[in-house]
Every structure is written in C-alpha cells, then in structure tokens.
Image (cartoon, rainbow, N blue to C red):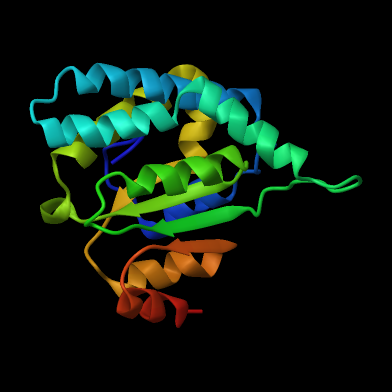
Length: 193
C-alpha cells in the first residue's frame, strides 16, 4: 500500500524492512517526514466531502503539527533522568483495528519518532474506508520521494487477508508487536511465537 503499491513476498518484506538499522529517536529527518505527511494530509482535507471525514483527518493533522511534535520531544527527553538514554526497540509489527480509521497513524508515528523500523498491517481491501485510503495516499506521496527512500524501506504499510501464517511469520522477526483489537484478536496474536 505505501510507500510501494506492488505486491511483495513475506520473506522479501522482512528482508527489506527489518534488515535496516534503526534511527536515532526524534531524528531531524523523521520530524521532517512527519511534517511533510502533515502538509500532504492538509491538502487531502480540502478534497474530502463529509464533515466526519474532515474531522478525522483534521484531528490527525492537528496532532502532527510541528509544535506538538516538539512538545512531545521536549516532554519525553525532560523525563529522562541523568545518565538515562532513549533507544529504539528495533523492528515493530503493528496490527491495527479496522474500526478506528486513523489509529494506525498514531501507532506508527510514535514508533517512527522513537527511531524504529515499522511494518503496519492495515485492514484488508474490503474493510478499509475512504479516510484510510486518503491517508495511505499521503503516506505514499511522502515516503516515495527520493530523499525519503531509506525511510520508505523501513516503514511499510501492507495488507493481507486475516491469515495467521503471515502474521506469525512477521511476528517471528519483530522485536515488538503493537496489537490493536478486541480481546480475541490480541490473545490470538500474543499466542504466536
């Protein structure tokens, strides 16, 4: 879905996305990419027609504003005690719900800011909606820019049918799994190695 539109085999995805090195938390390039994403989303808002769609997107645009990102960075770093350091966890697999349109962005953005490599599994085609498609379009636009190629490799937004084999294979290579969903979904995925 983003940044690339073509299909990819699971092993190739793992090799490409999870073989890369993590970044420094709150790296200037990461903040720049989120600011570009925010600007792209602002353009999308003007093309949306329903009040509900505008509301969801405007909330995300507001959350991604540069002043808020700077405030989060300052708050996180000010809470570190002397001689404490912040390090990325590594490779993160995000399993996001289909019933909260913008949830995947917050999950991904926090992990991205922390310097992690991310694979975000979005709902399958028939479960995605117009808001998610608009967001994916903005992500694709920003991550496919030549100056963002390193980040495009390490931040993938994918979809596949609810198939435990794909999730299990991706889980094996993830250092962290962020699972959003009902108790049954969370328990099922947590039971995977």
